[in-house]
Length: 230
Image (cartoon, rainbow, N blue to C red; front, side):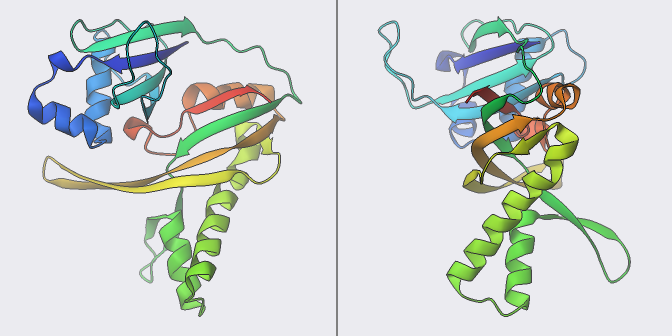
């Protein structure tokens, strides 16, 4: 596995693609990053998009453009004039009981049954908001609290099968709803950022989580868990 930091060289983008990049079109950005892996016939990478906030490096000022962190099975190959990639092998030496700080952008969802008995997937936060109002909690603070509790519960509920437990309550930020039309179909999903401390409880499961990601919408920049020692 390789962990890469990918920067965009804007001279290789036309105006339409540059605007799409700046607006955070997750699907288009996934397609863009796929060009780093021209020999792959399937998606074999996770990615996380951020905005360049690095300190001045090699005399180049941060440009306010997207910056991508990419975890992949094969080493990415830079695309001249379009994508620059700095890569290093990803093989963390961990032990059960290790405490790690983490950052995760996830797509938290919950499945509910309709009156017709059909299973429908819902955004966890919007589901919590609807249920809070149905139960009479109309105040903004009540709704906000229920939404945050639902987001934290979603992660805590999946932690055991992912090989870790949460140490304290994680910070939940940057909730976004995304919508895109592709080939006549509407694609909608939400993303949420988690940041906190975890403890490794099952090393095999945790290593699998690091490599395969957590949650859904991995092709749209969700699921990559970035960790370092607490």
